[in-house]
Image (tube, one colour):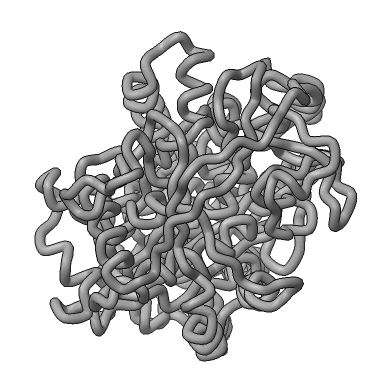
Length: 570
């Protein structure tokens, strides 16, 4: 049994995430976790809410609540929505947990011991209108590199160049819009990433199987311009992990907190401690410490491309720099952006379909299938209502749903609600078994390699084979002349439903459960032997005709939704 540690980039606490966030990290991570469990492997799948930093403070102030109370409430909201999308986290933690506070302070102490933290007196942007220092992400202006007019003070979302606020042209506060800004002196801690550059470079070079998107972004940050820079890991804020060396005070750092980008990735590890402390698991160290049993763990991270620099450089600097035997990531699956109907999804600007709204419209499987089958892997992709309607109606309703409905209803009408006896599988069935065996191998290969769109394409092709078989065999015609052969054809079709249920579970878990329930089967073992799998339901085994698995989206609905989500979320 292989062991897979899987983490999804942790969603920020300030509001409900949009579909672009979902497909860029959590959803494909869930696909992989479900697949590995289905193959009989041991999986620990972790995610959390990212709760520190100015955005949390501002969102809480806007909601008129203390920040701790706001974060607790929003964690529950995000947990419920994740459950609604059937995200199968083993634990959904919180970066504000005491476990993460202690572990972040521990790492800081170790890095300081190893001379990888330096104290810097610097000037930082202060907003007179807001009466506070502004974190880099709350200063926007024009990027000096590409001219994008909404570049943030730490990074340009358009060209991904790392920036400082003073680099921006015409900077302004995103809190108040004020341009009355000045640079004031303050003291901060910096992680000496420059000291780790060669080690990081060699480590990234060793990852020959990583997606080009991942390695190209990492290399760009390592070598472009002035190359990798030391990075500030503290901020002048009230809300966050207090700056300490382990459990000791850090002279000169009183009243400061660790930068959210320092503590957030550490929460991956702390989340496993929360998982144990919540009574859900035991021995988190066997997943994270190579001296405690994690040598045989394969660790895979999922994230959008904007998170790649922090997971390929900053977090590994923390792990390697500690000098302790922590597990490093083996594979980083990064995604491009999902755009929305001619523009961009945006949480901060309220543009697009958000996760709660999506579930109000249609069940999770509809969204899961479209998002995964259109995952922005090699380039950005775009959500349009026309494409969504077409994909749901053709793939889910016409191909899979129609197959299940036709075979179960025909069997009930001619043979009753039991798998029929009689007849034997012949050349047609043998040809289908051979085709499915080949397709299954391809499907497994794409799933193992986390090639999401290709895996979806193979799964759809597997569904199509069943429809083509049904059209070719035509048991409704065969029944008139040869009821015995028709019985064998129907038996084969009913077994295909169970087969489809198992293979489809990572993509559309609710439909998978419905298919298994209809076939009255609790055996979801992976079908390593296709021929055996298509004989799993014997003659006399009861079944039920399921409710329509997927309904079609009407033109009227599509037009209504198009209009409803054309503007900004209110």
